[in-house]
Amino acid sequence: MMRIALLVAGITLVQLGMAQQGEPPKHAAPPKVVAAGGLITTGEASVVCGRVRDSIQRVLLVKNVKSLPGAPGNLTRAQLINVMADWVAATRPKWVLTLPKLPVESRYIKGLDAKTTETLKKLIAQGFVARQCVLTSGTKPGLTPEEFGDMLGYFICRLGEYTHQPSSKYSPALMKQ
Image (cartoon, rainbow, N blue to C red; front, side, top):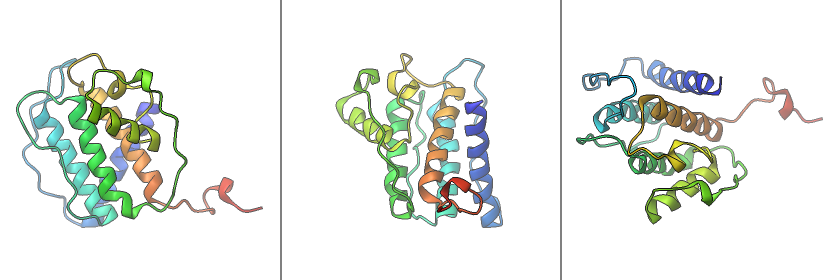
C-alpha cells in the first residue's frame, strides 16, 4: 500500500508541475522498456530524473536544478543518491518547514564509498531516504525499475512535506486548541 501511495503522490506532483506550465515539456524520446526483472539503465533513469527536475523547477520556481546525466550502463545506487542530494541542495531555500531529524543506523548502510555514505546519512536523517531500503543495503549492482520508482516516490513525498505548508483548515491535528 505504501508503494502505491508514494507512486500516486509522485505522479501527482509531476502532473501539477505540467499543469502549471500550460504546455507539456519537450523531452527526449522515451527509452526502450527493460525486460521484467532487469536493471534500469542510466539512460532510462536520466529521462525520468529530467522530468522530475523539470517539475521541481516549475512547481518550486527553482532554477539550475541538476539532473542525472545519460551514460551507458546501469544506474548505480551512488548515482541516484548524488542526484537526490543535488535536488535537496537546490530546493532548500524553498523549504517552509523544519522537520525533526530522523535517526540513522549506520549498520544498514553497506557497499558504498565513504563520501556517498555520508551523503546518504544526511538524506536519511532528513527523511528523503528510508533507513532500511535498497539504497542503504542493496546487494545488486543496480536498481530494478520498481526499486527506482519506490526510491524516487519516497523522495518526492518528503520533498512535498518540506516545501508546502499544511493548512490547519484541512489538517485538524494542526489546529490550535
